[in-house]
Image 1: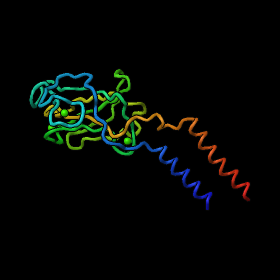
Image 2: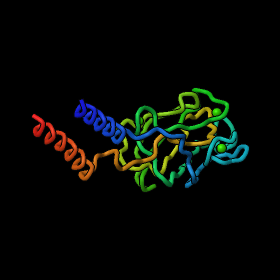
Image 3: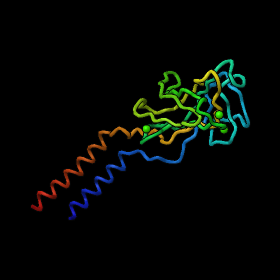
Image 4: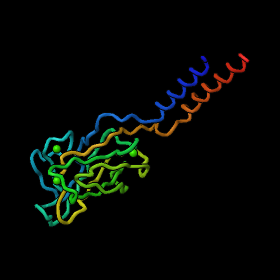
Length: 186
Ligand SMILES: [Ca+2]
Ligand SMILES: [Ca+2]
Ligand SMILES: [Ca+2]
């Protein structure tokens, strides 16, 4: 009975350790680059939504040139259960589409997928394994520009998403301890 309880506790601890916790949204803390964008309201795309930001076009619909922004996350974003990245738009329409790219170093970017102003979040789903320190958002529509109020993620990057050798040794030592106690009692 005691051994079973001990094993259950170990399993629970293992599960807590494996799954990264979904916390409150993490919003971009810097605007790193922008091109062909137009400000509305506060003009701010960092921090929590405030009803103002940048639309990704140099003039009102349709844009002459599609716009782009790159925002930074100083703590890095990671890939957790379900959707990971979201864009907050104002006056949402499914026709306002954007392509999302992720980068660790602001040099090499990986395409994660397309969002629109209604279906505004996406699941990294293993497409990017490092810390996401930068997200680039490109207008993907020639007709209407997405109005970006805020950009965020649900999970902080945790290097321990991949088990470390030291942690595995601790787990093995625990299991070995249970084994030894079983042998002694029998
Ligand atoms: Ca995910
Ligand atoms: Ca909109
Ligand atoms: Ca804003």
